Length: 331
Ligand code: PMV
Image 1 (tube, rainbow, N blue to C red):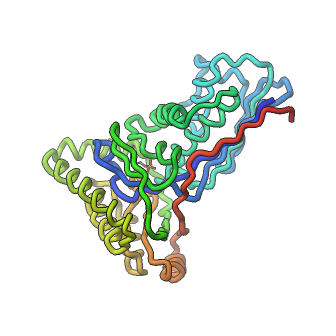
Image 2 (cartoon, rainbow, N blue to C red):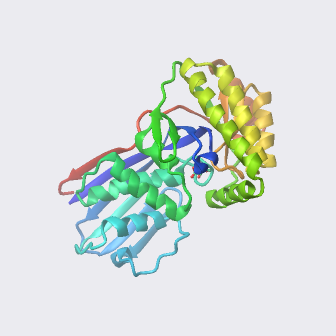
Image 3 (cartoon, rainbow, N blue to C red):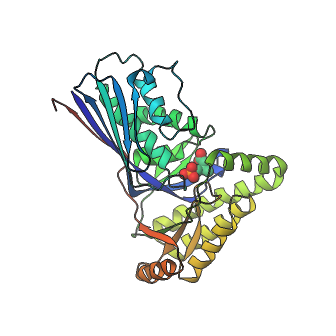
């Protein structure tokens, strides 16, 4: 019997969300919160598929759900897993059962890349069930395809950083570059708790771009410039410049209509309590705010923000992306 364990990290976007969809650069990093997926072929001949999660409870299906012609609602949280099973094990005829356990440390639907991490770890773990060892780029291709069933215009950036890990500069269809930080950097995430639909926000930006062609062109150039200056600031460990660039990026995100009053208030409070720079991270419309803090100000910041009722937590950049462990043995 085979059991596989795969885990993939969440992400933060430092610069360039939304504009990456229009081929502008993005700078993003994997963080120390993971999606862990364990898949197991059960010895009992129960022909069921059980999916268990710490966020959405447990569901059991007949194993025949894996067959493509059996209906499954595409807006269900578990659909990506069903999609991956259908893609990787389409002719699964063994008379056994499959158990999939999902343990997520990543808050769901708030811009931290939970669906990308689910797709990346899900593909790797399910490929393992098939005893198929694939290279990271092959896993990534299927993960991006899976993420596109959730949000069809996905730039693929979230899956890329979740697969390879670290701090990355990426431009769609051209390059992925790993960036080195000269100093350790402290980021705090503030979760507004308001869930968003990335697909809807990407469509909103599309409408903005169509109605404001010239302005969108200029804003895109500004984002590209911000990313170029950010590479230098990050590599030099110039926190002041990184913070300024984050604030500039936020201004542009407000302009294209993906910030909200809650996000703007959260940013104002975070700047008041010592953030060097602060912006939304991810698609916006709710979700999370990212604040850059000097190490020495971290506790003061957290105390005061929490006193004001914010849910916030420090995160660090995680260098490792996807991790996979396949065991072929008898349970
Ligand atoms: O909020 P998230 O984690 O879904 O991030 C979306 C990032 C976007 O740039 C808005 C979309 C994309 O496909 O890159």
